[in-house]
Length: 119
Image 1: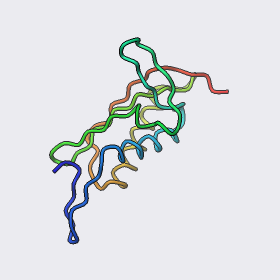
Image 2: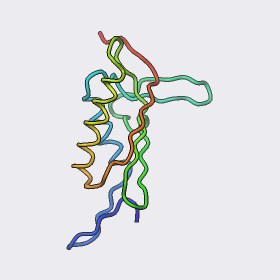
Image 3: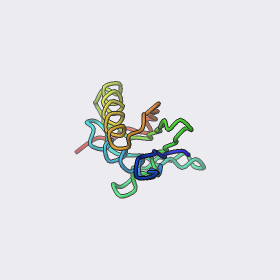
Image 4: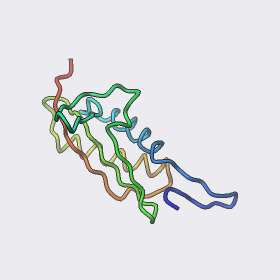
């Protein structure tokens, strides 16, 4: 079963929403990330999500081998190196989600949806 681990005491099943919420919390703590983005496919509009709705900018899928794939839609700060921000985001999220869930993070895809000036 996807997202399940068997222990001596029974089976633990982790929801993709829980992983998305945790990954979103880790992501907004990373330098250069302003927040998660919600993309309106119909209009092509991008908007910054509030901290209580981080999971809308993140898609999590778990393979049959319990490997996690995470897609982030983020807005970055103006004037920062996108490659440095994304490298930092990938390493932090990979480490913390693997420690949190006990499952391997196979792939992290980052979609930069916008740039914002930080006051």
